[in-house]
Amino acid sequence: MNIRTRFALAVVLCLMVTLAMAQTPQSIKIYATDGVGRDSVVIGIHPSATSGIDGALGEFELPPRPPTFDFRCVTKTGYDVLGLGARINYHQMVRPTQTDLYRLSFQSDEFGDAVTFTWDPFTDAGYCRMYDITGTILLCDMKQQYSYTYPMWDNLPQDIIIVKGDGKGFLTAEYLDLAAAVDYKGKAKAEKGKPYNSEAKFELTTPDSVVGLHVEFSQGIFVHLGLDFFNLPSADPLGKVKKFDYTLPPSTPKLYAGTDVEIWVKGAKGKAIELKKYWWIIASQPEKWKPTKLDGPGATFSKLWLRMPNWNNVGEDIYGGPSAGSPPGGPDGIALGNKSPVGTSLKGKPIIRFIYHPKWKDMQKTVDKKGTRHTTVPTECLITAAGKEVLKPYKSFPPDKYNNLLVAELATLKFNAYQSDEGNTSTGFRNLHYVKQAGDPAALPADVVIDSIIWYGDKYLTCEDSRFTGAELTTLIHDINGIFAGEFDTTYYGGIGGKTVLKPAKYLAEVTKLYRMTLAEVAPLTGPGYANLETEPVQFSLAQNYPNPFNPVTTIEFDLSEDAFVTLKVFNILGQEVVTIVDREEFTEGNNWVEFDASALSSGVYYYRLIVNDGQFTQVKKMMLVK
Image 1 (spheres, rainbow, N blue to C red):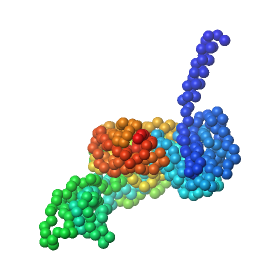
Image 2 (image 1 turned 180 degrees about the vertical axis):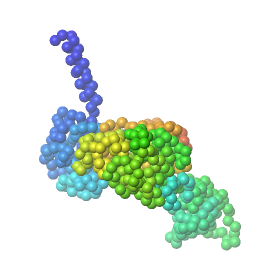
Image 3 (image 1 turned 60 degrees about the vertical axis):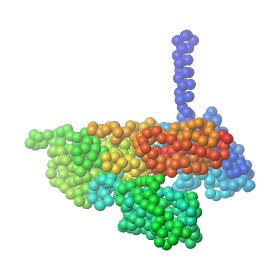
Image 4 (image 1 turned 90 degrees about the horizontal axis):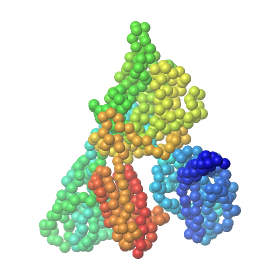
């Protein structure tokens, strides 16, 4: 063997070692105990795995079940073949974004208890949920909690299903969602983001022998959400009453000095609630004695309520505003067809089959005109519209003049692509791969990205592509629009001038028709006229506590890119909540810190979890208490 051959062989071996090292499995270790026995199972995916037992990956078949506590992964038909079961089970990695199902079997010892499962907090953005054996009843979201106790005890085998996959989620609109989008007044407009109600908490400390409390607020209160010790007043639907006399129930004759009283109210105006004045009613004071009037303290919690936005808010977002704006994709906005000439008319003029929407209100005219909607599936391309030959561009395509359901569905699909580009829902929608289904058009490729399906629709409308019929494209695009459709909800809404960020309705792990090739994120686009501030995701971060290990006080820091409501909780290694350090308190933009005193806890490992704006951002870190 000459030097060149040896060198080449060495290079190949190095590459093989490097690739092997790079092919690390995506796995999760799940512990189980019935109080008597304890064991664990590892599940995941690996590029070298098969559907059977792979000894090189540490998998081996277990012996028959003992008549005591047992925990193992058993065969899930269509996913693996494990014989009597295994402690380690890797599925073959076709792509890192695949969805896998694992069947875990367990039984309690006759002296044991119901089985409790625990796992370490997830550090990735994946999807992992636990279901009953049918795979239909959700037991827990393993991303949101770190332990689960199965409610039924049995010393015979029981089973659960773990679904692990891509945690990328979307919310998309269907055509009728866009057509029916209205504000709280029933008008086809975006919500203005003006606060309409308010909420606040106040804390007072009693003197001795209190039998009543008088309070005066800055605005009418239409409901008391909570009130410690005193009777709750009746709700006032009109929100006119500002002054209240709180009385104690017969079971509490009086309150002694140092009692903390919390008042939680909801106001009728979109302004912050103030507790202007208050005084205590003391048991021993004479009937005509004038009480000491005190200025109310500041609120310990304050929130302004905004009305839920609608799809018009998203539309105005991607157009840059309700009037001038910056249309997505350029000055033509959501455009259908081809702006370039596709032929010449008998009069020698260029034929242009093109529908464009330079403003959001133009798009609104296309999807709905005073309750009239597109209903007719086209039998031909845009050769004619309303009996006239299409020779020039159309600024909107209202259904009361041109009834064409394919136009409506394709416009909706492009809307969904643009709102993903701009970060209103998860980014990368147009790059998702669609898997051909039974009943889909024969000419459709087996695996095609959504952007290509958009292209097919445009080419059909301009009469440049005849591989699909109008009915085939209308049905296909309608189905894609509906895959991630669901209840309209938000994870963030900034009101006037703010961005509407949608809460996912479904995740890629939950659908079979769409997938992405990689877990890498696709950055939101910054279209013409859009500021980076609007299109970049809001960044928050949680720092490692210091000192760590600690005894018994430690400091926890976190950064906020904007003012936000923060919750900070501590969990033990079983995933059980042990302390709430901060509960929905408002913190300002920038670096913030809180001290945590763990005097009441025993030594051990704990996890602390930061939640911003009720779930807009969540992060978990580990700390150790040593006494």
